[in-house]
Amino acid sequence: MLDPVTAISAATAAYNGIKTMISTGKEISDMGAQLGSWAKSISDLDFAHERAKNPPLFKKMLSSNIEQEALEAWAHKKKAQEMREELRGYISLYYGPSAWDEIVRIESKMRKERRDMEYAAIERKEAIINFAAGVACFIIGVSVLVGVIYLIGVNNGRF
Image 1 (cartoon, rainbow, N blue to C red):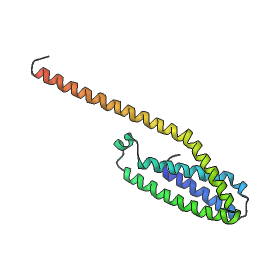
Image 2 (image 1 turned 90 degrees about the vertical axis):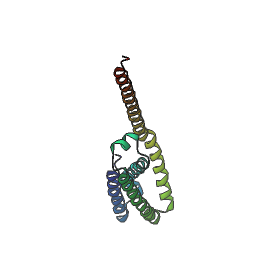
Image 3 (image 1 turned 90 degrees about the horizontal axis):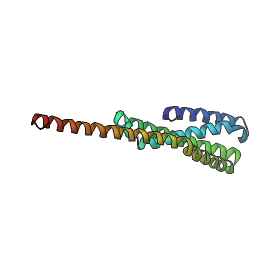
Image 4 (image 1 turned 120 degrees about the vertical axis):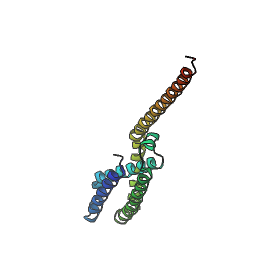
């Protein structure tokens, strides 16, 4: 899931679930699935924000609203930062600062693993598409150039 709207929706749902669990007095260990879902969504949102800052070549050529997508990704990232700060406050208040530090360590580990696996595959796919688009443009350019030279030659009686 790399769509910023979907990522922020999933992060918000997980965040609300975590807040509910905290308010009902659940142990932090019982929130593992919710925290994992929230961290995954935040990671997806961060990756979408990075991609919006530097979109792939084929997306630049095909999309006319790159600026709008970048602004949406930025706005969603700001909302995620607000959620993170509020969540840090809740968890530090109810479970102590060490609980938040542990969550940050786990989130960092998950983000690294996700970057190594999923995001690297997406970046490879985009690189392949960019390469193919470049080769296609080169072939079209060479074909047009050869066609023009041929037509000039035929027109001048050399072919």
